[in-house]
Image 1 (cartoon, helix red, strand yellow):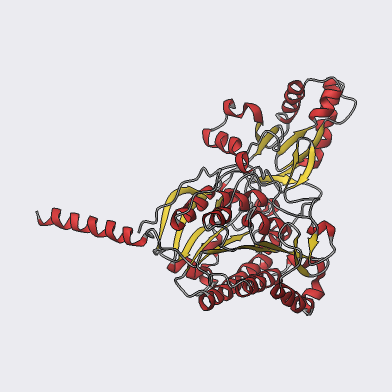
Image 2: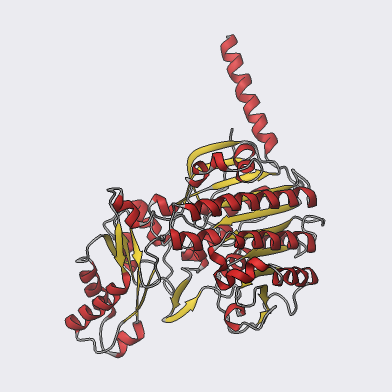
Length: 503
């Protein structure tokens, strides 16, 4: 009897403790800080744990809550999609950001390109004509702005334009990204007509940065990019007085140097080691500024990644592991030749191959009197003869494709009729897409495999208990979790589930 009583007392205690951790109506943090580390594999947390300081990554690990099995639940796994999915709680099927580059009804489109806006902070049209124009759904920040009658402030900061714009959403007060040509943080007229004084002041300091002047446009290949991004985030924190108003504000910070360095030098080596240890120092500085500005315990942080990365294929082969290249440049050329020989196509019918997806020219196919489905069938016929491909799937028939259910779901989650192309391929484990842009010493990402799709997910700060969970969760669960804690509505295309923090 005593054992039974003890058991129920223990259960009740745990339930009470759990309930105490959940915020009640009326409770809210002063600030939410979203951090995305571009190309960060989940296993980097353990790989570098003993080398991290106490107040960067380890503050999140040792004092926060880790979901150790967070997976990306769509294909392909690339930067723009990852940032968007984390903040919208949905996938390309609904939010419409189907890659860094994709075709919209046959038109080659960069995810944030917007010719209706102008750069602010420089005259660099190529770098500055950007906005969230192609984003179809709302984000956490949009819902926060709506809930507070647009009193909450939402700011995005990153080296990459897409990594600041897409997290900040449609109604973000501002998104700032780095114009490497002019060595300045800029924005566009989508947000404002002139940079605020605090941003101008920081840009003046940046213009005097001798290290930046030395490395020039190649700044993304150095940890310096992380230092600069952190400085700009802190400048925004203080300049906009985030966390100082009546409503909860949001700061979205994305670190991109990790991705640029990974693409150049891979997942192993001095360059990768250095960039993560330097990033740890940047996080330490950011958290110290948050402690000072907002107060420890008054802000909620989540940290994740937009995708992971495969090990360099030559590194794998040198260590007797199965790996290799899928040369998409050659595939496109040979595919065109095969279709021409089979169907008599006089003009090219393949618009491009982006992220393991083949985009066909529907208009060009029709003008040549060819049937679209027949062209797809012939293309699939050729691709299935290609070495090192596990699956080749007609997107429109993905629901019936003879592939594993979890893989079908990821294909369908990533498919938007107007933007995702016609055919998707999956390469064998260890293989990855390799083109003229690729580095022989570097790596890339984009597939379903754990090295690309298993990402860190850490929560820290306001009301967050210390603990960890091994259960499978998804990148799309981040947005509904934050929204649930803020007691605001989920983004309008959200498919994720709010996570439970159990000890």
